[in-house]
Image 1 (cartoon, rainbow, N blue to C red):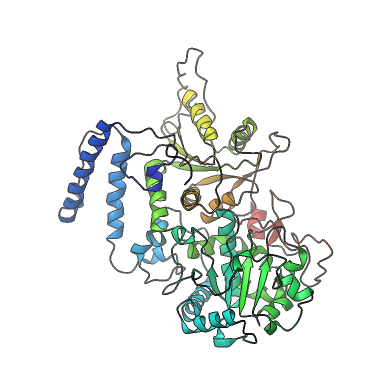
Image 2: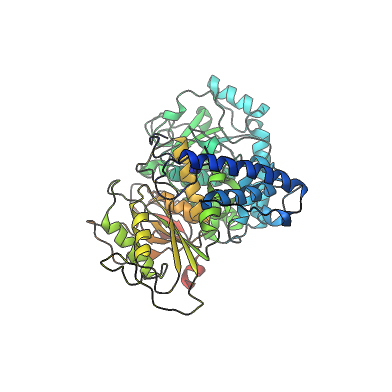
Length: 576
């Protein structure tokens, strides 16, 4: 990552495991400490070898360490080796109620079966029908995916420009193109997967520069990565003006039988023109069924808009009786961090979050620039106070700098620990909250610790190490018990929805003034679709603006973006 040597965190990146990580800027260890750590490392190697032949109860490391992190590293490494020594099929609960297929190589993707140990029980369980459809999709991916004869023939036809090839080999394809930031791409990937299942297409994902280093292969016995030798030239540059765009094919001069087009490009960016959004409607889906190759570009969570199509309603009802579970369930099936990312997650969690009685995630995104703002900090503190997420600070430190002693409290409250995980590009908010509790410990006697994995200062698109850190932080947020997110932020949407958490959403400030209220409880764990269609499929009057947020009971306007829509569970929302 282009952050400069002084800002790159070897512990977080897993480059040099010998250096400890803290939430602050790292200082170079002295040569004496390095030598001392090398001796500790050698002792660890010997101890690990001993664990192979000695009973676990005899493995007790006794030594004198100046730093806590090496001991944590020893503990987590031993636990990790134990997990990797697991033999045979994963246990039933590790398959998430049948959501995950058995028989995959768990050593090549530790997170697939280990993540269940770091999260609460599944907030929403998959239905038997959804599990059946997932197994059918896996069969389709294997039969028609890269390396198969049907894929080779389909690629050759695409290269040659051959037309009239609908339903050849019974294989059709949806290619998802990389677009915008990591949060956007994750939302787009889950949406595209659902669309592929609804339309019986093989999902292939443009790998960009980072996808293969971020996520494991989700489908057994095949790949979802678009091959590097894909025959269509210039596909990454497709846009709304392309002759093959959905708008031009359907409504422009290129209108004609679907079989006359070797592919169709669907542009569903949040700012896409209304004519392109007609793709959500039923008769146009019948049109696309006759096209073997479909390319999709979106930066949004477009899954809620599929529920507007009468053609899909019965299928979606069978897959998701609870409409507020779509992203959560599909992401638990589809998205598994690679071992490199997963090591970042588990090391940080084990070192700083695991032993806390309660974990609170605070996801911070500033829209007015990269520098810190006091009103953003005030909003965070106002939200956590309003919702009783953090204990009130005690008496401030005296002018002389001595820390005030908190008043006595009952034994039950004293000693209870709360770990606060903050994520954001700037570390000032983390430092300010931590310093507040250092100077003014909670009067309740609770112990509050504040941690932040990284401070990148600027967002960097399609930078591998930057994306790996960002993904690790999303998963860490998903492992908290409660979460505060920033409105409009796809990063926050993903962090909450991955964990099945209903977030407290901080509203976007106006004129740099803390809004009232500073945050609201979301009506569901589902992400918001920033660019829904503004017409009903039954009308198809795309020139007339019509907000679809209340057309069906399980679609509601988003709290943070009034023109957006999100999936909810009506009864659960009423009860809340």
